[in-house]
Length: 246
Length: 281
Image (tube, rainbow over all chains, first blue to last red; front, side):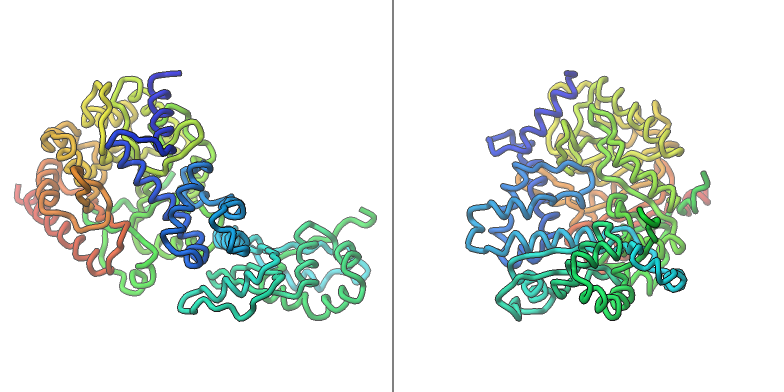
């Protein structure tokens, strides 16, 4: 190992450590812990609001010691924070906390996702009725589907802006749709069957395959009502028609 | 590759989210806007949409904080690819980075860490600047950083290291006058020696910012107004090399837009005096 490589490895070791270090190095360690903690607080504001600033900063410090930043882009930092909270003993009384963090990471991803083109309605109208079962809808790149045993959508929305943090429901499970529209990430709880149908579409199922798992009756109702709504909201943003017999 | 609009040698400000709407509405006279490149690495979404709106109104400067040119390891190909696609799309007037390192053995500090100023570090740094300039198809600028410790085995003064990087790679220098001041206090050298070592022909841009005193050190926090000492040193730098596009950096505890524009106005007055001096000469 070269002199430079060894110097830098030792320096990074010292930053990601709790052992005493030289005062000059300590300034950089403090900066790093503050910067990475600040990045987590920006990505997980509801988690921070739920546990308070001091608790959050200490959780963030312990998280980064075991999960060092792997990218020069701070926006990449925080993946795995939800799983860390799920196993963090001091957060145990807040059973829903890890799922709130999962939802916030989904929002973080949604905000930065590629711009979708929107569905070509005229092209869809041109599909022959006998080919409908072979339609494979795709979801907008900014859509995320999150599911929790806890009322995470109610908790998330109760902790936005000026809201006082009191959720309008105490029980889950929640089936949550995250989407981006007009430069804003929207979080809403949707019907479980519709959530499962969207999940099937996200997996690349054709309409026929998605319907098979949901039952004919639901599929017919979804095509009559849900489809237009999700297209209008930009959730369903494209389609292809699978080869016959494929 | 055609680069959009090189800024006039006048004052610009950092473009930060709290000011987007007001800037768009008021469109104050500014030579350029500077962004942190990494804040626009998203695949899509609102941040890039905002940048599209501003690019037609002001010359742009993309200032990177995460490429880690000073690491002993090769430049991160994924990070460089994201920067390259951003630069290709927006064609900024300047692309800049720092004379520092951030990562080793896969772990990032996401901070501007000081280099040991050795021949080995210099060769490695120049090779990485070459690789980035090759990949981007253009020259970049590199900025001198603030530092809070020095390596005992450094053999080259910081100012000579910076000057040699520019000479050997053909890159430009982004001279951060505040960082020169902070280091001169932290490490006890004459800031004029630093300024004198930098070839004026290589300096394409200047940065000004505020610092905070923490214990026995000055820390470059970008959270305050520019101090009197730094304004004086800026005046001396400009008198020596002539006016340059000059950025007011304010990234933490971001003030009202008018406070930032007030700082830009102060820089503009000093630049203007230098311009009048040039015409008179």
